[in-house]
Structure formats: C-alpha cells, structure tokens
Length: 202
Image (cartoon, rainbow, N blue to C red; front, side):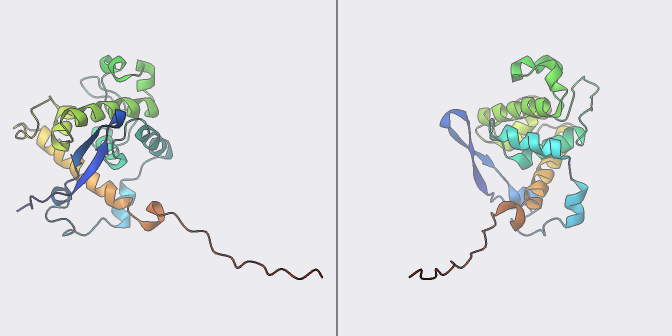
C-alpha cells in the first residue's frame, strides 16, 4: 500500500507568487520515501541526454521555474529525447507541442522545431498548468497529456493517461536521484593555503 505521506517542496511562480507542488517521493519510489534504493550508475546512464538539451532545460528554468528533473521526465516520455519526433496528431519536438499552439506559448513555429524553442514552449505550458492546478502535479500532467480536469479529481479512466502519468512520475524520481550526487549539488571548497610568512626587511 502506498503511503499517503508526500514530501512537499516550493514552486515559485512568476511575479513572486508561491505555489506548492507535490513531489510525491512515496508514489515515485513505490512506498514510503526512502524505502526503495536509488538508481545505480547504469540506470542513470541509460537515461542520459545531450548537452544541448541539458543547457536548454537549465536556461528555461530561469524563465519558468519548473523543476528541471520534471521537465526531463516529460521529455523522456513525450519524445525519448528525440528533437525530430513528430506524433500522429502533428505535435513536434522534444516536448511534443502542436505548431498551432506555438504563438500562444510565445515561440514561432520555426523555433518550435529547435530543442531550445520546443523546451521553452513546453515548459511554459507545464508552468501554466501547475499554477492553474495550484501545484497539483498529477492534474498538470493529465492536462499536458490529455484534457484539463478539476484539481485533485480522479485519474481519467482510459488506456493512455494513467500510464503516462506513472511513467513521468517514475522518471521524475529517477532524474531527481541521479542528480543528487554530492559532486553535482555541492560546491567544492577551494583548498585552504597557509599564508606565507613575511621576512623582516630591516
């Protein structure tokens, strides 16, 4: 049985407004937070991505502060990190954005076909959904994949959306854990040097 206790973390919206999103490590890890061992180096390596995508995710975080591991999880599920992916419905790029929505998301159709432009548009849509649903990540993911719903309402009963949400949440947990290494999250302190002794000039 999945523990109902979920870890909460702040999500800062534009304009200084603060919402909260559900990180849900209990759901992601399949039980109580910390009950499941983290991914090993091989599993993290299997979900690696290019430097251009990583730079675009980090850059867009300064504009739309959606957690980068969540953005990467959506990209993995939507396109498997393939910038040239095109769906049967005509959605394009890493985050599978419809060209008809490019203008509403602040990019051109041409920019939508680049990694940076596609991530900017998709992250803006995800940020709008997170704010609309007051940080309810499950509802935001349902809205991104299918149709908007009332906050905290039951999961749609169809063949695609529940699996989509589970896959993104699992990948989100994976990317969170794969970036938790001390080398990537802590600044290394410069080595302390002993001050040189001055010799008397007299």
